Length: 162
Figure (cartoon, rainbow, N blue to C red):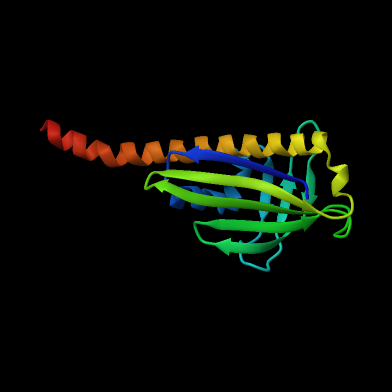
């Protein structure tokens, strides 16, 4: 079964990473790969996801949420060209490394009669898209984390000067 798997370490809690991953409304503002995601992250619910694999035009699928273990694992399964021809399971797995460091495993597993058509060129494009999303997620969460830490630290720093 072809698959694309990536990992990235984020300097933030898994709680912070999880919140952004499940904040579907924010995707258009920061996510270069999944440019829109609509629906609720409840097991069994349908989502509407729009992917952009540069240089191809965006594609929309309507996957079903198959797992949602809060702050640990989230995935959906969707079909392109019909479920017998090609089905993909897109997943996010979070592992806390420290209270402020989170390992994100992010990927796609493919099942179906045409999965052999997803040779190296297609897998490479999907991998590039996933890695671009990972980097954007890392930047977004770490920036928010830095702003939150700075806002929290400011009153303490000001108080110590007086």
